[in-house]
Amino acid sequence: FGNSIFLNLSKNYNYSRKLTSFSKKKKWIPKTIYAKKFLIRNLNRGNKYSRYISVIGHLHHGKSTFINALSASVHLINQKSLFKDFSDFFFLEKQRSLSLQSSVTTLLICNKRGKSCLLTLIDCPGHPEFFDQTLTGMKISDGSLIVIDVSEGVLLGTELSLRNSIIEGLPIVIILNAIDRLILEYGYSPKIIQKIIIKILDELNSILEECILKNNLISSRTLKFFNPIDNNVCFASFLQGWSFTLEQYAEIYISSQPSICLSIKDLSLKFWNHFYYEIRNKSIPINNIWNKRTMFADFILEPLYKLNFLIIGEPILHVQKFLEVELGFFGIKDHELTLNCQKLTLSCFVFFFGGCRQSKLIANHTGLVSSLIENIPYFQKSVNYKKNSFKEFNFLSCLGYIYKLCPIRNENQFLGLTRILKGLIEHKTNVSIVTEGHIYYSKESVRLTCEIEEIYLPIGRYNINISRASSGSIVFIKGIDHIVKKSAILFRSESRIKNVENFYFSFLKKLLENGLYSSLCISIEPIYSNQLKKLYISLRKSNKIYPTLSCEVNQSGKLTIIGTGELYLDCVIHDTRFVFENIDVKISNPFSIKKEAIILM
Image (tube, rainbow, N blue to C red; front, top):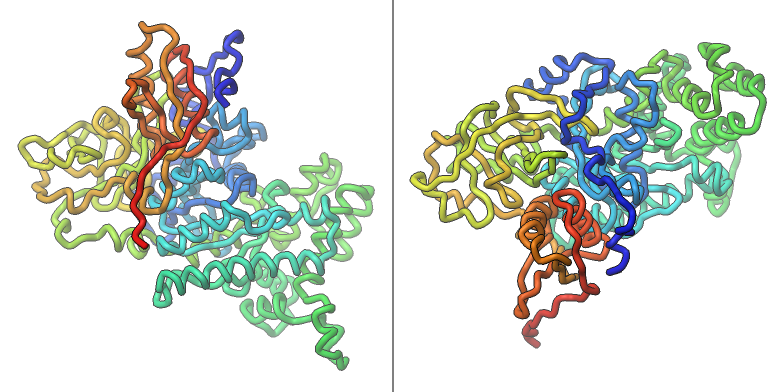
């Protein structure tokens, strides 16, 4: 591990040119299917169709791919390479092909009723060593969206995310991703695929039941068991660009078959629970019922199965006949059939899950958006809002919580990821800040104040400069980094507030309450003694962006860095050496912290 951090010092890497969403680029703001003013108007309006959601799950289960698919559906850009890493833009994230920092993307997407919904998605890392970033995203959001790869099932990161969401009281929506892997890679039949889906849902519901009984959360109304009939389970393959829910498919089926005298809810129930219609008039023994396929396998999974294999291995004429004869889609054009395999796949699935509607700009994610709007409440009714609305602070005109700091390229400044809890915050206004170790400055005479220079709305790889942010918004604030250590609260300077320590809590303490401790250490020192000051400055900056990172000087006088694991410390050393300063350092082998404790028997 010690040698892997040096990253071949003989080569001249220019790490300062890495792409970040917080950098001063060429003012690159791509066009979208909606006007940016319309997006900002919906942000400041604070309507009931605004949701702030953390996207969590295990490593490589498709969280970033989900955000990339939604971002590509609303941006008018033909360069698909820009959307492969729309939420992963750091150098190390591209080098290692995994998310290391939580990123925020704000999009305006229509639901199945045609109403504009403002979704703020926090893409959280799935690696267990970066679970502090996941907890940060869960704390700042109003609900959780757990992405699961159906070919791998429920793993460590899935269980950790689910348990912490239940403890926080956040409503949960499940996405069963990568269904195409079961079809193309494993070659499973529709019947086996449905059994795998039922097994995953049983595991999730057993974990949910255990947490409810253990933490006495029976009276909680935000927690529901995961069932596709309740519209809190979504099926998807974001690499192919499609997703659907049972209610969405039932609505499409009823619109194409008006003679069906069933409601959307009743047809969804029949899709999931009823067996194939051919067994109605036959007497089947109870032991043989489970060997029969359900309507979900015959009406949904089997067309998916045929579409995947037809597009890959059959001539274009056969694909066209299948779409027209068996599925009844006559809107596909000849030039679309001559596209490459990936574009043809997207076009076919847009027709299949879009109900023959020409919704090419907004792909078939309307069922997923409607599920998020239905199951996750808006800010004023969320659990985090109720926890933070204390009566003794009702006289405050505005209040915000800074959860973490993010660096700006080519500048010695940071942007504060802030959730506005109350009121309205505008740029060029003076605010007071209370952060770690600043409790003694809570008196009005020694209060720490600063001016908000800029406010940015984060949208993945780029930001939009806005003049103000209303209650519930998640924004970046510039000009507060010289006071904030890791997390902080801010309020207007003219507000006369007492006993701030009763309201402010350090987010680091919150991580410790969740059982997330830094246990691995390395010693670090510069090769050249004249770079010692640069090393201290660089470590102080790295300490701001990693929530659980801590730096100490041990008894022998050596500087030690304490983190959650080897990959975590590797990223810290990279940022210390190449991003903030250009320093040559030598490090020791990793060792664990020794702590003494008394156990009462």
